[in-house]
Length: 441
Ligand code: S3P
Image (tube, rainbow, N blue to C red; front, side):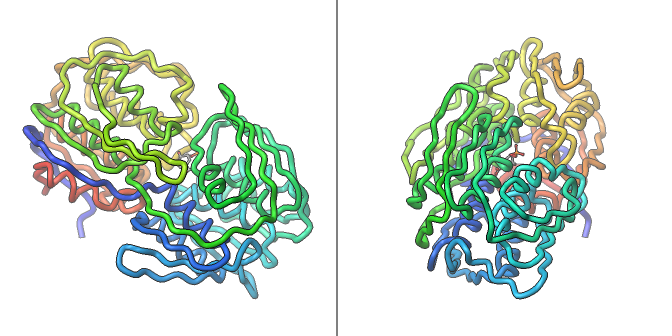
């Protein structure tokens, strides 16, 4: 089977309403929390992507049963001390940094050695950012702590820690919160702003967790060893998947789109704030509260009067997965856009800052880079009329999808490799661009 797609035509004149797949961050957290709950949890609209399916297979190896019935995953936990392993276990996280890092937090009390492995991309990403704080909880043995495979052997003798999380990584913060759940006493975390789904879910489950939000940092206190019951959850649409359709619509002629029922937690909507500062006029309608989260329909229209942005650094964390697609909008805007302090992008599924800059240069956009800051010289008339091949991007799903949006809005004859990469986060991506009129070979 060929693993590339060819796009030779732009799309325009669409007027549709779509649903994107379930939120990946929330799906993985639901699976992990259901594995620690007492009794049965029912999770509806769980994202059925490789990252989440690998999470399910992994909890099964750790002794937690699940089954699927209609649109619902039923997971049966035994409470906080409930992973059941009789011998050494290997679990495979595939491409998912979120699962691998968060599950480590829950394994601080594992009574056998657990080895976590990942695919090639995940195996080049740093794990010391989670293993270092986890070691502070007590006599946990962790080997090969910088890169996967990581082996962890837990202990029942844990003590709470005080920890300052300085990167703004929700994965590190959540791993420490999860370890805190297993520990007697109060774990205190000062964490630079990042997505807060873990805290919201735990609060809803009745776990004693306090969060004090200040400008740059959140102050979190979690009291460990409080069991919680199985729960029901309906996973909303993923804003990070919606991002590709938001930009596809903005940059296509004479088009409009409604994306239904998307999670619009403030710690995730940096893309909307950034694009609206660029004059995109994206609207959030039909907003609803759901278990401490907010969902909304997102309304987008074509827009050919987009302006450059001087992107405020405080929006970096709430748009952390969206910068590739935001760069594309900057390339089609009037003026020079600036983005600063984007070093974290190079620590994702691929070195996204390096890849984003070389992609823009390849399509003829002038980019000035100084360390982790970039300036993009926009051109609202940007059109392409040549052959382009996109390959060797470490199979990063977001590079693939951004390239498809570029092909569908800028023109040219494109061959884009590693189509299978979308299976990790957004399996319906190709089906949905076809609904909007994309012709794909
Ligand atoms: C995620 C956190 C972010 C994000 C990733 C998902 C999460 O990573 O990039 O796609 O679900 O916690 P970092 O915590 O490393 O910034």
